[in-house]
Every structure is written in structure tokens, then in C-alpha cells.
Image (cartoon, rainbow, N blue to C red; front, side):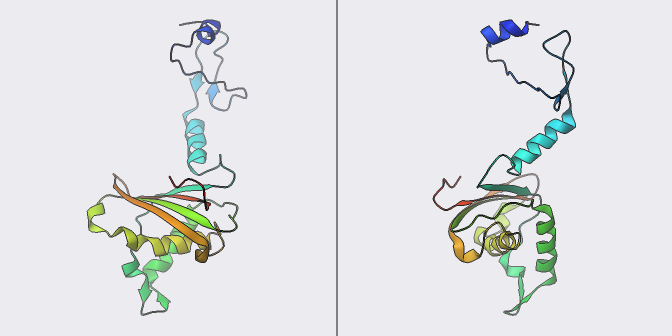
Length: 171
């Protein structure tokens, strides 16, 4: 194994990370021995990053639920179906709390489904946007100026969400 000073002089595509407080690893690299990764802490940091803890204004979130189609939201014109009420509760529980973005926003959705060919992409917007308003990510759906959406095939159902002040890059 190379000594730390040799790696710093010529990194040769080596990943260099410094864990000053011992959050991610046990042991020392700078002395003798090899540090041992703390997998649970590394996974937690990765999850916090995915949930947007690294951002100031843009909200990132990912929830592992199957998107609900607009076809099952309403009984008649005014009453939410039990499925819609339960879906809303589940999503509100799973979404992390964030500071509200004031003013106009853009939203990016990636709906990952096990069977995407069986679903219409545009049927997912209404419930998802209403839930984001209920979570207070932005003031009201009247403030949504643009929507970017995609559906992908995946091993598990999930929704990846980005809410950003209108005018920032979409993806």
C-alpha cells in the first residue's frame, strides 16, 4: 500500500476522502492500518444527499410508492376516493419536510414503474402536485410554471421529485 504522502503527490486516479471527525470510518489511514468504513453512516449520508439536504433552494425527494393515476382520484366531481386519501397520507409521511419555495416553481418528476407501458404519464401529475402543495413545498399549484416528466422502467415503483424556483435548469 502506498504511503499517504505518495498518493497526494501522484494520485493515479485514487479517490481521496478525509473523514476528520470519524463519522464515516473507524481507524486511521494516516498512521498504520486501514480504516474500516461505517456502512450504516455512509448509507445515511447518501440518503440525506438524495433527499436534498445538500441544497438551499431546490427540493429533491424520492419516495418508494407507485404513482396514483388520475383515473382513481375522485368519486363524482368533488369527493376524494379512499384510495386517494390513503395515498396522500402515505406520501405526506414519506416526503421529507422542506422549506417552502415562494413564488413560481418548476417541477421535475421521474416516475419509475415496474410496468410503465400500462400507464399514461400525464395521469400522475394531479395527485403528485396536490401532495407537494399539501407538504408545503410551494404555495399553490397556480404557481407551477413548468413541468418536466419522464416514466422509466425499474425494479421497484418510486417517484423522484425536484421542485425548483422557476428559471433554474429542469433536469
